[in-house]
Length: 273
Image (cartoon, rainbow, N blue to C red; front, top):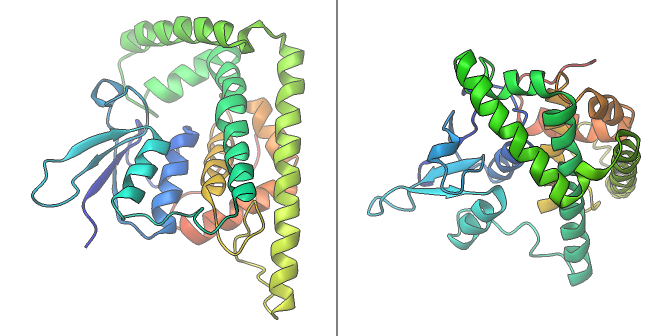
């Protein structure tokens, strides 16, 4: 029997994906291995590294429950505890490098553009979605105080990182470049997967396909699905990215197939912005 895991998402425990791509990423990672878990709101002050998501995890009945933070580090810990399989174990060194590159492109580059779009360009809907009734449920005064601090911290972080120094047109160009590259991976992965399945007499019309085109998912799929689902859920605070993602039909199909296979009970994101 798997040890109890509570996934803290900073959103009410409803049957929905949330705005955080890292929460969605970790949920898919758990579901790919049929690991049972419960969801809770949690809060940043309780998180061991003040990041969302974090989990409460009791490795065995003799252990005190632990709080683990950061979606990547959580995954590595659960792999080391033999609770999750290593999805990348069968990849060649070059394939592992490609998988890591896709994750880095999404998490270490695109996410800064996402943060600017949400917390700078669309501050008020983002504040309401994260801190208001749809998220942490804080009173308006607390939203105003905490939201203002978050905004100032993000402005400073983005300026130091570099994204805050670009013009809006430059950010849009760079963001489009990333999504175009990601879509190219997905299209190639779909073509490889469907060709292989048809060669075996399996149309695979309703089965997921994977970004590297292999038989099964890799860590990059968890990251990519989390990012796509988060952007499609976050239409009020990321309208530009939502329209951009919807402009790539294969990318939306990729996410839809994973949703229908692993998150059947979850409400689907909005069809239009």
